[in-house]
Length: 598
Image 1: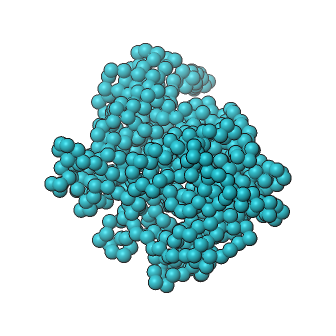
Image 2: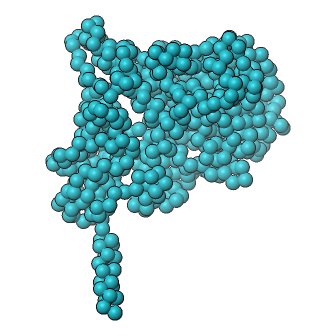
Image 3: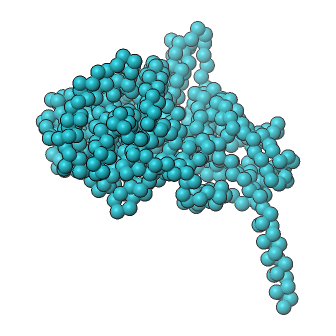
């Protein structure tokens, strides 16, 4: 009885303490003013959230600031979710500090290896509203995912599943988005392929949602990544000239001119609802039919559910298909799978055994001459990658791929490897007297991918389809560009940098991609356009460039219009309405190109 009397009060003390515990999660991407930090959402599926990145190219960026409101004042434990992106025997390159109101907390952050929570301090919150600041110390890509205040000294979970569940609980976030929007066609991915699909379908009268996770359109062709568009226009010159680029050098600042043209032209369509800065995070299929795609705003976190009878996956990584359960491939097939050998290059072209090797991702960059001497910091953490390599700019050959790294799952590590290569190579170049006046002008922080998931359609386009110029009754994309497969030059000589690639070019006749490669084999209402179309590894080598993928997008957009007209799904266009479809595409060749739209 005495023991019972002791336990009861302890229970109530514990219960009321738990009830009174205050906790507050501030997502870094929600900051009122990010200052010089940038929002990086490209690894959300891997690490759990968009985050703020101090991408200052070696110069500390302006503070990020936000107001935080507390229901209860008092003592709070503070944690920051962050990572040291290059752990080793050197100072962490991404160091930063936290300031609360005017008080700088005397704790250097960004030291933890791998994403997780770093304890900051136990601070006294004396007002119901405070100002929180992130202070970058290096300019070398410090990163902050979230800041957590709690009256309990209990670190939040770190494992991906537990963290995702905890986040939902602490934010009282329901499973389903609070808003649902319905369309004739939902296009996910605003690269050249996605833009072309949206335009083609809109011109046929469909109501379109175009969802894209960046503030500007174009994907690899955007001013943020700066790859020029290659390939021919095929049947869709009028549409593609609204969104493509001039042939400026990759990485050129001239990308900004084509950016304005592209964004303006897409926005001119009143029946395209453009959802910039929205990243899709889920799709649900029932009985092989996609019911919806869910997307989240990359800074506010606001969520929308998109429903439609048909969807286009132009995400590049094939995310919509993946979530919906579409069949897909990744890596290089065995040479025997499709007989895609090129004896002269053997294993570099097509391996005897299948593997996970794919073409790599690039991070482009450049520097400029100035009128005075320019310093650049020491970067010991970059030298194990750069070694003695010295350059002042990087074009398409700056590329990284490894069979041990997945271009989707390990994309952040791949990007970071390229940043180390860039900063280290530039630091080496700065030691040369002729580069004393040079400074970094631009370094992308976005990975420009070439290859990852390839969704499987009714036809898998192969190298032999291109090599032999095979004609298909449903051929809707035309190309003459050589097939080129990239490989890391370190495979030929171990002394070469592991971040420099070369290309093997195989000249082909004019070749054609069939419509059957542009819809899913097993998800009945899913189109795909872009590098995630249905092809083999070697088959991707030619048509992966952006005017060609733009042709895919336009072809899919016109198919979607006929799907609506006859209330059918993509495969039925091939089986029942192919002649009308091909006639619609043929008409596009004779459409006049208005000067105002170029």
